[in-house]
Length: 222
Image 1 (cartoon, helix red, strand yellow):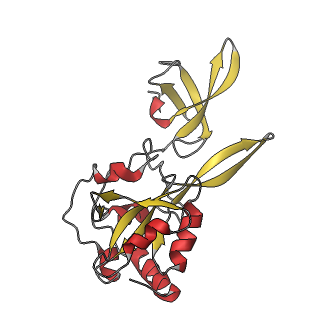
Image 2 (cartoon, one colour; image 1 turned 90 degrees about the horizontal axis):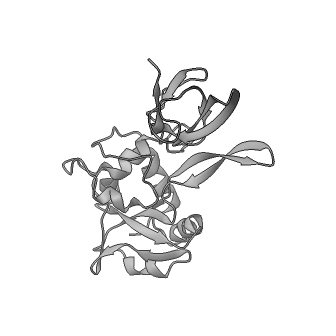
């Protein structure tokens, strides 16, 4: 199936306006590979409204070469395929400066819409930047219904996926460590370091020290 750029743009804009049809477990601590999405679905009963817009096409998974996700997406688009590469933001420290950079949500993976009855899907494997189309046996492995909607439902107004929906702390909140080397010590919440880690100020040997720990390692002090 080949789509014009205008058709792809209209479909993507319309898809973002749809309410989410199903809930899937998206763990902020396990997004190195999206294959776990196929195993952690809560429901298969929802109608894939995004796939339906592409003339009954469905979403499939593409494995790209290392750090070639964007290149693969560009070249797939040039062939008329509709592809989706979700990103999130991570804070970076460099030369005493801190800034935010975008990273692929699933390094070396992206999603593509295919109609296996009509598309020349084997051409995906020879696309620049692509390692292979993920298959089960000799057939491409379809993404479960609703997964893409769930990911897009977590995008902010800039299009970045938020993985820290559970972080409700504010600067100055008192917290207590619940695991790790600082177990049971108290500290002051300072900031979120990236989408899964936070910075906490605590007193060690009488001196204030900043430590970076997973979000799951702290809890409100009572």
